[in-house]
Length: 592
Image (cartoon, rainbow, N blue to C red; front, side, top):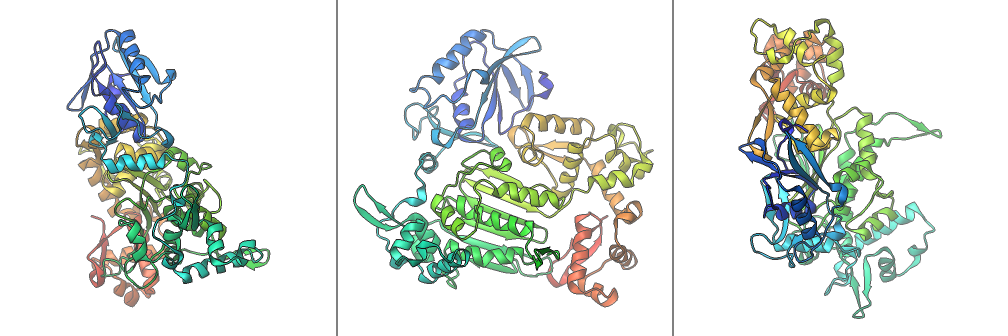
């Protein structure tokens, strides 16, 4: 292990520890366990982003102290690490203790210091981790962790003061019609209203106090917006759609509070799902002699929307937001993942926060297979060679965000079209003015870089910056592996870092940005084979006239409005042109 590879981030912490455990070790233990897990190094000193090995003088004493405290429930609520998670590393001839803290199972949360999870004293209570370090959880966060630890689904709770009259009968009848369409002989279809709702989980009985009524799930699924907000004050559903040619902030918007419909999650799903998929290309396909207009992309978007509604914590602020842009979809909902991001992306494991809502959707064919949703979405995006789905979990406030970009990395194409200019020199010489722009471009996208480095470079170009935690999800590597790749790119003058500690971000250096921008200016010469005839026609028109607009493309080039927009978008995605202005004043110019 090399000290040059050390860094601190959202899941790595270095602490000095000569002869005893540092006092703030337990805050980090609690924070890692309650967030995404992480690694603590004892015997490493950090100052202003620089690391040095101070070492642990009495390893046996410090390790014994660690285990004694871990197994003392007056010190910490639970020990979630095992012998294999504590190891001794030799760095620069000194002993360093490495402690791997896993993400705690939801049933063990909250992991807290002392005997009270709500304790407000400095070194006691419940902690979590964000880019600023360890922070003390407020009472509401602790309450939500305790609620999530229960194996009884939260949405099965019978709500006091609510009756069937608080539900929207049209929504219930629509649900029954969908169930009948799927299975016309289903035995529950013949039941009276109350018994039907009881069977699907929308109505329940509290056998402890002998009461019955509408459940949490029933109110959310079939209630009226006003009644839902009486129980869930933070409840809000928001669908937003934006087109580049629209002068409006949102071209199409549906919210639960507009008063034009019921506002419940069942009706929201069916109002939104067709809008999400309306612009997808549908290939002509025959299945058993019948045309099939559905695709894996349609199915993936339906899964994403259903997952959002099923896994939301409806008592957390900011509500559900679903966005549809020109080349992306974004699904954002309150709450935390009940399994790790890795388990969610790998598929096969399902732990829905709202089991009754999941059951009700499953009965009508929505979100049918447990644990298959993200896996299905990933497959659909990979088949299209688009950027992998990005799943992010944030805290304070708790939020899950799934971003699906319809963008290709295009790295292989650059390799094949530029191989005539292959150079073997190191990219650290990019500032050498004697080197031509074409040669520099060859250096960046050829033999000097691995596939992971290529993806980071292009992602930094797309998004402006990258960070360690985002790249872990994107590349499927741990934080240390990502850190090593980023350090290599910084050392070779491709990236530079800004910020310190856990908030550090990486951007392309000025020389690399300029070099890439200049090459994109001559994109049609460098990669002419990759542009189709319509794209070449648009690029030539811009070169001759300075810019192009949708109106000019329809009047001068003979394209339909829809086709023109499609061509513009493809050129923007490939970095050939950029969009300026908004609404009727939108123009497209070459990247300079």
